[in-house]
Image 1 (cartoon, rainbow, N blue to C red):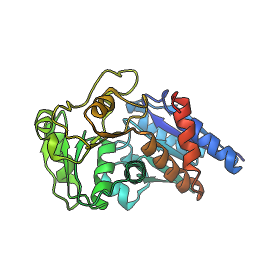
Image 2 (tube, rainbow, N blue to C red):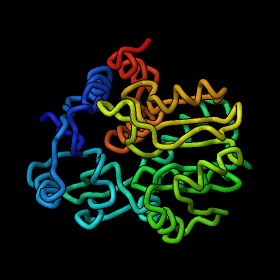
Image 3 (tube, rainbow, N blue to C red):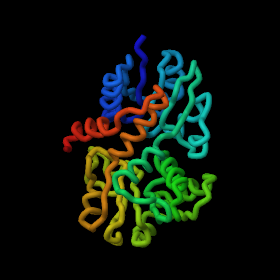
Length: 278
């Protein structure tokens, strides 16, 4: 019997996960299908009940459900619990178990694509949502020197730091405060959706004070290069888009569902080609 997998989010029409995962199933000879499910915030609990009722084998979780989904699951693994966000659910004999592959996926892509050693680096995260929590934890685990967080609502950045059990030097800033201190950082990461298609002219943070050769990475992959990354490139930064994180978090989720780690380079090519890149 064909197994069913999917992704839940709102909005979800832009997701490339179905294309990427269905190709992997086909290449590996796995009788399964992956579908995108649009789920409004107020319908999340019923949607999770539906996963069990329909016997769906696993799903990814994206904006805005990564934190809100936790109370509706049967079990959360240790990393996802510490992060406080879930992006992957595995149905194990009717029990829904939550994991987080965002952070590990981001770190693997950052190291691979920029050839940098995270150990000892000073890092600024823009945003304090579910993706930021996963990335914060994973970067700390990779032995960054310090990780500061800036957010439009500063108290949310403060809460992310205070609620984490990660032992690392961190401070919370407003966007304006972070812009003034930008030269202090070797890596700057946009974890927000600011600049995501179709709002492609928006920028999460001014880069006036960014140093040359800073690594600027944006977890957005549509468009392939956001206006913020284009500006960073003009400032002499080393830039990275969100394709690598998207591919690796998906590959790690695929492995949790099937026990098989897929061809990440094939996944990357599919995503980039679909987005009009080379």
